[in-house]
Amino acid sequence: MAPFERLKDYSQESITFTNRAAFAFGCVLLLMLILIGRVYYLQVIEFDRYAAISEKNRVQLQPVAPRRGLIYDRNGVLLADNQPNFSITLLKEEVQDLDTTLAELAELIELSERDIERFEQRLQQRRRPFETVPLRFGLSEDEIARISLNYHRLPGVQVEADLIRRYPYGESLAHALGYVGRINERELGQVDPINYAATHYIGKLGIERFYEDLLHGQVGFQKVETNARGRILRVLEREDPVPGQNIQLSLDLRLQQFSESLLEGRRASIVAIEPGSGEILALVSTPGYDPNLFVTGISSRDYSALRDSIDLPLFNRALRGGYPPGSTIKPVIALAALETDTITPEKRVWDPGFYQINQNGRRYRDWKRSGHGWVNLNDALAESCDVWFYEVGHKMGVDPMSDFLGRFGVGADTSLDLPEAITSFLPSREWKENDRRLPWYPGDSINLSIGQGFLVMTPLQLATTASVLANRGRWVQPHMLQGLVPELGDTPVPFNPIYRRKPKPADVVLKNPDHWDHVIDGMVSVMHGAKGTARRSAQGARYRIAGKTGTAQVVGIAQDAEYDAEALAERHRDHALFIAFAPADNPRIAVAVVVENGGGGSSTAAPIAREVMDAWLVGDYNNDLQVKP
Image 1 (cartoon, rainbow, N blue to C red):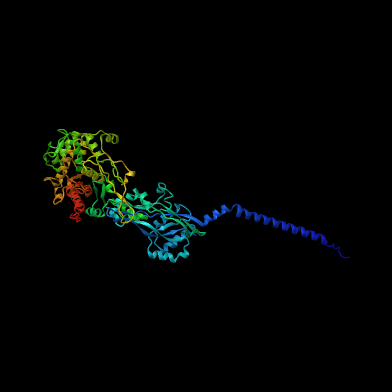
Image 2: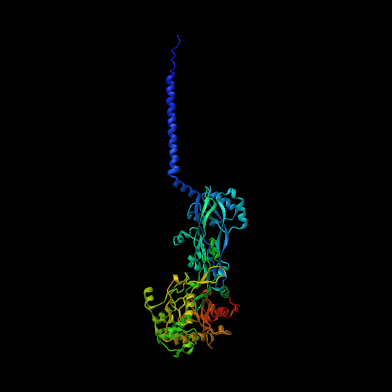
């Protein structure tokens, strides 16, 4: 018998199918509604938000660095300009394997360990995404060509051009201008981060540092369209940056370079000031260094050579070198003695070659072993008689001497725009008691009266003292800035740097103005008197010079011993110093010269100053010296 077969219920199957189809249609419809709702939410309700996000991904606002201002000398000669520089940069977001990329680049161009180390530091300091980081600066044309040919296998690598600082006269102006260098994190924290958003360089020393806000300019912005990788496709809008101000300095390049040639082979400094205006005409410190080495980052080898040099080329002797002024401060001491009625101009002092506080006391020797005999003020200055100053220094005591030295700027930085200038200190009774925990002894006053002992001054302070003497007490603070230069060839617009620095010191006012005549006449006798210590340096001069020689001991000499330069190592010999201004009756230049271990001020420093004054006053730029290191 055949098995039982169930009959199909076509009516029920039709109902089941219909139900399933309706359910599926409902699901599809529901999903469609959800999709439409989502689209509506995104396209209508959230339109503004996502449009802004999309636009931000496509359009970016980028800062544009301003051009740094140029620096000119007083005659319009360009001292610091900007030149194109090509560097290789990497964009981190596009570099797939950094180590591999660096290795491939090292096969194309020269990369030192220092280059890679500095690149990694910059990579860590990157300020925002999609910002390229420089790997090496100063690419040659051949290197640019090799990189360009290999762009296809170096994603994220590109050659970029920017403007970097260039100092066409190299070390001639390094200690006067300073230099710019790569900006670091500490410096970024001290400036406006918005204004420096695209800036890679900042003034590090000197004028470049002091007038950074003038030279830098104002940042600009551009709105650019980028692709998905952040590459710029086109510039949509641009607000140009405001270039930095061009500035004109009082320095005279020709005088600066001529002064430098006078010091060739020496450790020395020259500072020349125009007394009437306080403008610095020359500021020389030798040896120097090439500031161009520091702009994009100096190599370890070059920096070590400069740092470890026994001659200290990085040291700015003109602004930071502290030297015993020796006899160059005797005119100030003489003024103090006259003003305090310690002595009169005609009063004579007997000089047997030494001075004693008491009969059995120490003998303070005169530079002339046999002494000068009877000397008055004019003789004491002309012949630099130490005993005359021992006498008045002992009688006056420290207080008047310290007071008068302070009036002439000793122990202070009176310059307006030289940020590296040091103040040193002003010896006084209070200073010694507080600093040394010792009383001020009469012997200290004797040493101070001839510029020895505790007193040290910089060449800038010596030149400033000479300038105040030339002005008969009228103070004009030393400075370098003459004015702003709108465009090349334009007349400079006067610009007063006082707006940011110290108040002007009080003029030196004497109870008896005739004392100026007595002291300045003595300084003229130094140069033109029959027994003047620098009379040889003034021979043939077409103008009258007021000057004062100085010789400062570097090592102590026993009381009864005689100084013998040949018996001493070169670096233990005396420093040679000289200050002067000319013409004596209408000063147009004040000069200070310091030659380390140069011997006598009259034989070494005075002839150098005479050459500087001849160059400035009569246009004689022939070096008639036979300077031997």
